Image (cartoon, rainbow, N blue to C red; front, side, top):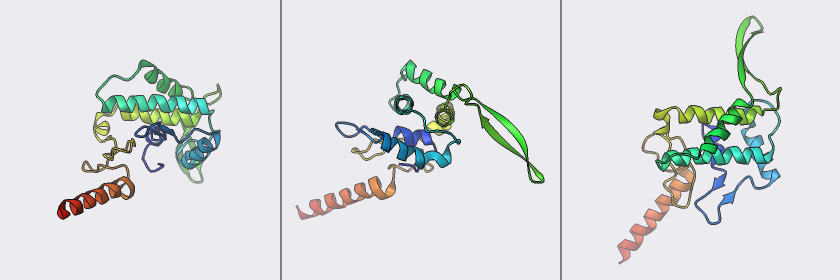
Length: 183
């Protein structure tokens, strides 16, 4: 967790669905604060949002991504929740002098209570969902005991992480071959 190019994927992956009961990695305020600190370098500056708002956006994102992978329509409320988070803190481009050069930046408008971090995450997900070529690279980890989603740069990538789920699969295949060789 924390290694995907989109914070929205990392957020969706904080709910482990391949185990029963599902494990919420953001179940406590401390876990949420730790996750937010981990992600903060990739988000606009601003306060951490309230836990219910983060969990609501996570549920919406997870539904959108799972719907894509399961070839079904997402719940209408999921679309509404992502759009609401994105629209709660609109942006505007700004130009300013940076020494002798001009530089551009994005200003997040949180004057009316929106959270820039949640808006940035929602914007990432909107861009992903609207890009079929990128969505084609969105699989679920091939490890049946893992529910992680990831963007595969290489179409042959099967596991969320090669050193965890990929290694477990290789070890399992090795043990199967050894068992088959003994019989």
